[in-house]
Image (cartoon, rainbow, N blue to C red; front, side):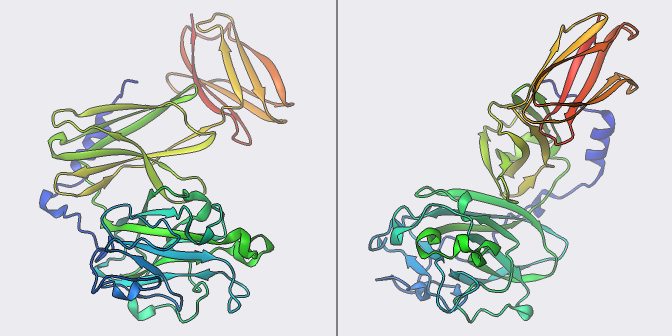
Length: 414
């Protein structure tokens, strides 16, 4: 795909700000973020107290592994370094009739998160491969972080889930069993947060019957490599990020303003039913290359959302805008002939009964055709009379009310 940059876009991007590169510090605000620093080595379960900086969350007893001790009956190997945290979530406790038994720790941030500023939150997490007979991933527990101002600290005395909702989290069903996944979020601080509670939290489902069984909802998580970094969105670095759906593929392209300052480029996609982003592809960064392209060969059905995460040589993190694409590959669409003359045929196969709308515009943005009709599920062939259309290219928006079919197509009238 050829990326077309409009002059107005370039002018806008380069005239917003001139920022000193020294401001991109990339400081991780989480002390002892990899759980490496200890006062002494743990010798059995529950000894999170040997960790430096971290303090008790609620009244439960998280596990800590380091110094070669990776547990009796668990596979708590870290994602990096030697230390890793073990957190139980799920299995209802007698003291928690309306919630789940959860475990978490909290820590003071090395620098206060400022209200109105945007931060990137990342962490590695897996469901332990065999620890404590962990069940399969499910939605009864959230794993994430709750940020707060210490003067407004939540009550954490119980072993039950605290009465707060984490600003960033993934559901247990989104975590791999026996394999770490790194999740990344972007949030804007709503207050001056100086402390964070990190661990497991109950979901609303934990109250229901589907999450009340000890056998079905217990999960044991390994947490590692935490990160909270202020996002420095530098307009002169990510000049443009654009994309286009091509059949069953999505073609993406972008331009970087100062490629010699770039250390790495990661293309991320949004995790389903979550605010988290995870890496889809790592793109090699070249000091002299400004324009990049990448084709997503197998996008998932439904809404796909992509963004760039660019790391500079001085460890600054830059995030692009998010590009959405709504695909339903089970609905098929065909335009023929293309190019054509006095008639355009549109073949469509729908998975259910619904309204279909067709809007055709010329390259000046003028609407030349609108058709809307109700179609039953199955295969259809619609005919558009194009004998009065002028020769040239036309842009067609073809969609169903449900959004299951949402396509933009080009057709040429000879």
